[in-house]
Length: 241
Image 1: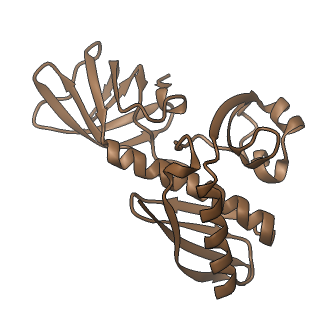
Image 2: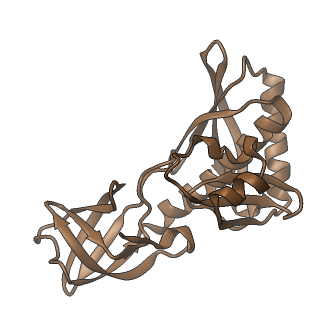
């Protein structure tokens, strides 16, 4: 099973690893910094190198393990080869900023409107959040934008840590963590927490990458909304440097 280095070192963009398996144009490594698509966050891209050969990593998927899809003129590296990997750093940073902003938006929507997040999708230059709410007014969106920027400017710390699922279910707020959505087979969970330890703004089970302080997010701007059904709204937003 590939060791997911991105779960601990979300700012790391270079690493070395050993090829464990090759399946057509995909390789499995013993460890990786490349984030596989999931949780509304796109996969990392970048390059892996062996001696004088290099391949673009165009997609990363997690199935039974993590598969790196390669494009290049040379045949994929052989099992046992030592590779050096390098992520597209700007893409990783953008996804981390947007993912942390999405957590703040979910927290504000739940706290002030009792609107539970039902879905999200992140990109490098924009994102959207779906939540269970009848209809946001223009005044609501202005308030949400203002509140998000207040939280960003507060320079709140962002932390992540692992807990046994039973401990997390007993200790943490189930409405925020949403542990009930995870398969029963998951016995250990990674918690992302924003704000003071004794009174966090957000505490959510999440395997995505994040910035270490809300100030890194940049300015939050609502770019639109749309109704997704009788009881679901979509908020679109972008981040400015």
